[in-house]
Image 1 (tube, rainbow, N blue to C red):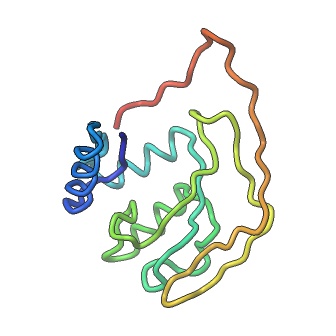
Image 2 (tube, one colour):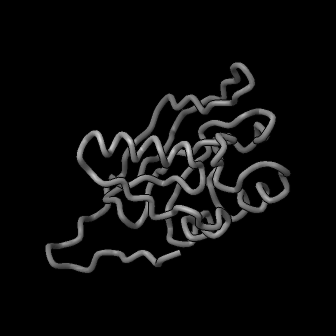
Image 3 (tube, rainbow, N blue to C red):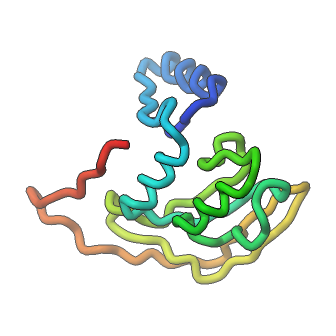
Length: 146
């Protein structure tokens, strides 16, 4: 099973334990990568995501519901103590689309909710736009290695 952890040992030990119990191998392709490089590659490869939650002490309200893009990356670099990829739970995202998917989610109605020091994007409505499928034997997008 593939996981996206980057450097939290407790996550690594947990997923390895669960996977061992299930008799499968845990893969951590991003392990010990530079978090800024990881986020830059995600953006540059054409993935689309939005910020759906954040600790109010770490992420300003105006960023909830906004895209994960280079502007967001630059904003994160101005926040001392905030990990670029939110590895310590500073923020969470929802991937809406990208080169590996057959469609894209469009959020059409949402509201920001604050509770116990956290901001959340309450998604009320969405639509899924399907993309034309790649014909059998056709080219499949290749991702660059970071």
